[in-house]
Image (cartoon, rainbow, N blue to C red; front, side):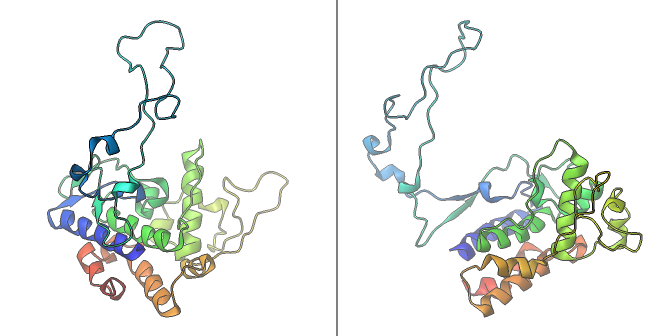
Length: 270
């Protein structure tokens, strides 16, 4: 099922890329299951029960200052699950949604909108924008949809520097040392690495005064994948790990295109 979801979303990306368009915000929340033909369903079945007692709408909306508001709705409707009208087990069909942050490859944005943990390393370090960001995000999602774990889990922080440092520490743990040209742009790298580029501290923000450096065991993407124990046999696991490595390359010019990924042996299984 995960392979089918990934393959169809990749086909959608390939269609966009062939037309010179990047999705720009590729993440699980924008991968939707297609609805069945709801036109064939009765209105009574589709209509939501508009009742506060049934928890389908909220209590009346009121301004905090007590004044009358002529513009706000009187009630807010609770989200209604549409799972009953979706075939998400057999012959599932995926729709790639939310093109609000899409852009043409010929007109790259200055500040792309990408979830923190799905950012490519060059974007984290220098803000450099290229046309491979959808591909990088897709590589992260291959790992996530198969294992159920995010490959890079970057907690929110008031400090953008600490958010970036946390992400970069995870990148080096999972994928190996940054190339020299990228590493030179990491202004706070000395908080974590010696001049010989040996890791001595994993505490984001640096070693606190009087404290000992925090040293954590480092797990590669392959080791992290195995720890998750996904429900695949050894042969398929090897294919998936190879695919993730093939996609998540530090050099953007070496990342495969969406069309090339579709020809990968793992996707030809589907």
